[in-house]
Length: 319
Ligand code: NAD
Ligand code: SER
Image (cartoon, rainbow, N blue to C red; front, side, top):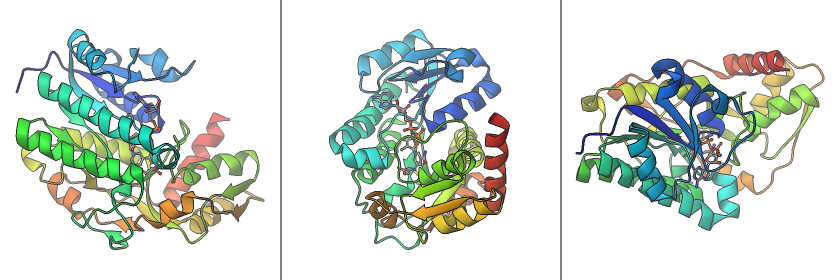
């Protein structure tokens, strides 16, 4: 493997839901100047653009990424740029191009320059034939285009490690719940939208049914898990490196609405399933994360009650 040009961190897709939190956490840890946020778009007055370096960069631009890695002295890439499930089913060609093509750009750049890579996967790798609590190792037969791109991403991460020694690692994130930035076109977005609607309108029309149960996670657990995985010694990372199952919590949309009603007077929720119901139905209820626990000591800290309190408190503070 080549010697990396430096030890700065490049984050792709940084203006999305995860990047908005992850870049801040990495900057707190390594210093603002050491973490370069990048995205294919700019968002005026976004805090990441004011707190440290930001560069416009498409993950489909291999030459652009190569120059950036050399000029900015990068040693590690957190590759968050992607098209999520709901948008991906509307635009499957774009989803494949960005998710698979973008990951190839990142892994090829990493191979060329000896970089470490974090490239997330998703619970969307599972299909309807997976057990309701999906084990780490089980047939991966997703029915969504997005899920298929995530299976490909996991396999590429493992393959680049085996073939070229690229230290690429990933997590099969559950649906993530955060308050700082809106979710980006996924099926689990209802679990974030419901909080904003509860506080602003006292009502939410939920696009999945009340009995829809999915694996979910509060953003602070997801960010901590990401950093813990990337800081784990190489010898502790096993063959699940392309996508570790991480369990956070598992609840139905009805459970979530009820938990919010207990804190927000007069809140009502109507369930009006749309096409996203079928994507949710194809995913498991929960995941078994024993491999991540054993390999690098993962443990979630937030359950449904703690997450709901935190979301409402933070959003109330913000308004
Ligand atoms: P997001 O949709 O909020 O953000 C993705 C970002 O990628 C956006 O800011 C977008 O502008 C950018 N982007 C799109 N095309 C690009 C391109 N060609 N070049 C550069 N940037 C581009 O997504 P997120 O929720 O932050 O997810 C990040 C990663 O985590 C993705 O791989 C996603 O599949 C995975 N993930 C997220 C969740 C979740 O609940 N948020 C769950 C499972 C997996
Ligand atoms: N939260 C993501 C989505 O719904 C799962 O990867 O698309």
